Amino acid sequence: MDVPFTKMQGLGNDFVVIDATQRAIALTPEQAAAIADRRFGVGCDQILLIEPPPTPKVDFGYRIINADGSEVGQCGNGVRCVARYVREHGLSREASLRFATSTAVMTVRSADGQWQVDMGAPQFAPKAVPFVADNDAERYSVSVGEETVELGVCSMGNPHAVLLVDDVQAAPVATLGPQLERHARFPERANIGFAAVRSRQSIDLRVWERGAGETLACGSGACAAVAVLRRWDLIDESVAVQVPGGSLQIQWPGVGHKLLMTGPAEIAFVGTLTL
Image 1 (cartoon, rainbow, N blue to C red):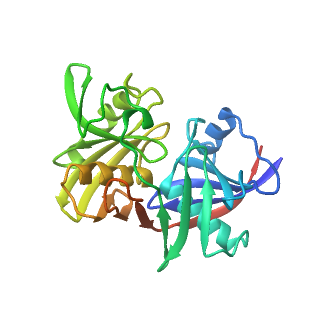
Image 2: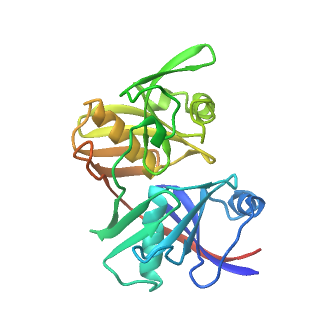
């Protein structure tokens, strides 16, 4: 079966976007991993499938398949890309688009040449992440091998941990990231963010993504970092998040409010897959 695709990226977080609104596309984990392979396939961090709406309250379904073939429920950079795809391919002319994943509903609209996403309200309760803990706390101590690290956790529709570091370039992303991703206290694994505060309006961030490894940008990870650091009263309501691939603007008034993320969505090239 031949399947048209569009290669897209948001700040270097790259995707293979497939329109599955007219015919169902079922990818095995092995097929997904082959597509994502950067030497033998197209190469991407995630494969994004745009599907018919699962309920009348949304415009489209949206599935996210990681480079290792696992499926997840949230990708903030990805939803900006699928929104641009939908608009440019005439699948909808609505000014505001609602996408449903297995865990979240996101509203996306264009904003001065970029795309703004209503990511919903961050959830900090351990059961919502999920994270194994007796009580909800702003900070947790987690033992990793012979060391103990302090982190915050939250769900943005997918599980996140955030560690505060002095310098993201020196942070042990490649070693500590995979250890924490699969730590026993994260029963569904987790995305691990390493954040450094530049000022109350700007932070640096690197993210080890669950099922994909370190990426140049992680939209939900940027949102989680802002949520945790604002809960710690280290940053203000509007924050520029500097990731290796560029900058995202995050706005979050605080607990109980929705979080807004604004950033780009770019097209790299188009092609056809043979499955």
